[in-house]
Image 1 (cartoon, rainbow, N blue to C red):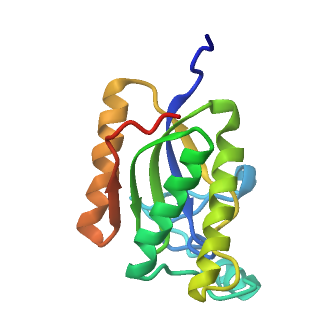
Image 2: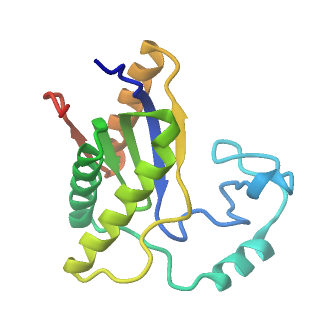
Length: 176
């Protein structure tokens, strides 16, 4: 009998070009090499528009915005691939430029599993005519600390529907 080492994670994915250096909503440089005051709730007071212009010019393609029709497809593709990888997806919200997932998976494998799911969604969307990069580099995976944290995260993800995101909830047994 094996012990289930899976834990709940709040995973956040962004599409290519969604969050750039110099973004007026706030931004973080890699490894916080440059200290930037503020975040999306309290944007930075300093003007970083030159940095944003440079970041936009450096893009290899225009920023990706998922259409309303693509959002459900992306949500289903991510969920189905994570299920194949023995992860359990409770809920998902797919907006124009970001995705939130509440997933139960092994913490040591979270980055790899999410990467495989992103790759799967990218290749499958090519059949609908979408070409080029789909995702921003990496993802953010926040380990859920308690049942209350899980409950708050679940409701936070589903509230994205109020702003036009496609949401999905799967309560049936998904274990294999």
